[in-house]
Amino acid sequence: MSSTSAALQRFRPLLGPAVLIGLIAFFGALYPTTFLSQQNLLVNILDTVSFLIIVAAAQTIVMVVGDFDLSVGGLAALATSFTAALITTTTLAGEAQDPGFVPLAIAIGLAVGLVGGLINGVLVAYLGVLAFIATLGMSVVYTNLARFRLEGRTVYGLVEEGFVEVARSSTFGLSNKVWIALLIAGAIWFLLDRTTLGRRMYAVGGNAEASRYAGIDVKRIRLIAFALCGVGAAAAGILQSASTSAANTAATQPWMLQSIAAVFIGMAMFRGGKPNLPGTVLGVILLRVIDNGLNFTDIPDAIQSAIAGLVIVLAVLPPAIARMRAQR
Image (cartoon, rainbow, N blue to C red):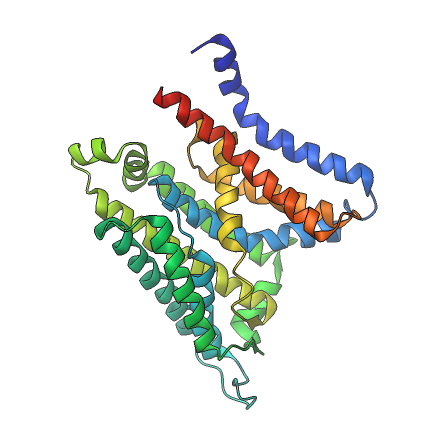
């Protein structure tokens, strides 16, 4: 490795925070009274990234083993549809009903996410279906099952006590949604960086064939990764429904692309192109800051979306180039 490459590797961990600070300074200079307001920074940005942090953290697990999951949005919608239908105070027909037991409803939603993740894992790891095809197809299945479960409507009036009020409350000046997201992201970081299972996941993602010769059950590791991703997607969907006191199938659909983009951004900024939790969280925040900052401009929505897409492409390029160089 040349001295220049070594220097770049040493400063790589500083790239992400530097870009984030630069973006905040840029938009803050343009719109100091609005962009830098407490309402915008703590609510419009920080509160709204909590759901995506969870989804992207779960997506990181799958990408660590060398796969990706395009069904996270659909699976989140399906899990949420089960939880919401059990704890709404109003039926889809508009009639009043007694809501069910909140912990049980949440557990059922998480179980739906687990089952969905296991289905994805079996298709990819054991049946050999390409992750792109398997998870994209199952995304359509999960989304339409959620629409069927909710009869194509939005469920309102979710129970306040123990559900909505938890998501909308704050602790030590920070929204509970953010604390929950950080707790889940921290648990996933610990799993990936501090456990034998996490090390095996990185080994499988680095070289599945070598891992197989080393005695690692590659299929089982990939199955576990998809299962955990399914649970994470379900958790994000349930938290989002608690925050809005409503559930529908449209709210979670953008998470597929956003979660993958966040992981790629993190890969470009940390660990030389490997998926990692700190980079993913930073990627989520960067995407949200860009989106939020552009909302203050007069740039048309279509151009804003184009800029966001360009950011994703630029985020994907460094890891792709690094892999090409490594293969030479």
